[in-house]
Image 1 (cartoon, rainbow, N blue to C red):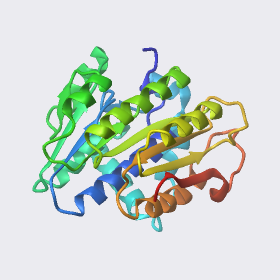
Image 2: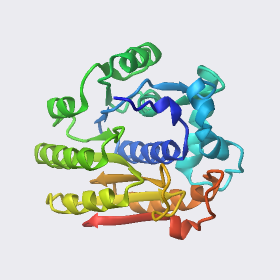
Image 3: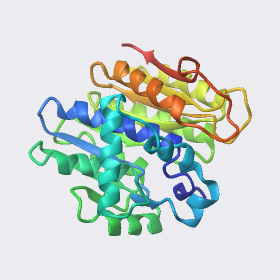
Length: 291
C-alpha cells in the first residue's frame, strides 16, 4: 500500500470526517446505554504537522489551521467541541499534533468513563500499527494488528448490540475499492442491521462515486445518508475535489446536524487555487435510501 496519510493529516477531508465522527459519538452517548466503536483503518493515531510529509503538501493550512485561525464562536456545537478537543490533544502531546480517528474515539471514551463504551482500532500495515500501539497505548481503546475486512466480520455483532463502525480506507483503486466496500457493508449489515456504519470516501472520480451510490441502493439496506463537501466542482480535474461520508443508520436528526455543520465550515476550508463556492452548491446532505 503506497498511500501515506501523513501527507494529508489535518486537511479539509480530515476536518469534515472528524467533526462528523464527533457528532455521531455524541449522539450515540445521549441514550446513556453501552455501545461499541470500531475504527477499521486506524493509521498511526497521531500525526505531526511539522513532519516532512505534512510540510511538503501543506494541506492542513486549508483544513484544520483555517478553522483554528477563524472565529468559531457561532459554530455548531460539534465544531466547537472538535476544536476544544484538538487543543487538549496539543497540550497533551505536542502543539503541532493532529489526531487521527482512533484518538477521537478513544478521547470520547475517556471523557465518558461510566458510559460503558468499548472501543477498538484495527491497522493492517505493520509500521503504522507499531506507531499506533506506541502512541495510544495508554488510552481506552483496544489496538489490533488486523485487516479491516477480516476484522469487521470477526467482531460483529458486538455484545453491546449498539455501536459504530468507521471505515476510511485509502482508496488507491477506486472502482475496485468501492465494489469491495459495497460487499463488505452488505454482508455485515445482514449480521448487524441495527449498527451504524460510517464509510468515508473521496470525491475525485465522480463516475466511480455515482456507480457506488447505485450499487449501495441495490443492497436493500434501508437507511443510507450521504454527506458531501466540495472544495472544487466535480467537473474540474484535480487530485481531490471533495470529501464524502455514507452513513448507514444515522441517529435521529443527524442529517440536520450534519447539514448545519457542513454549511458552516465549508467557507473556511480552502485550497489556494480553488474557486469560491457557496455552501449551498458545495455541500450535499441527502438520503440515498430511506429517511
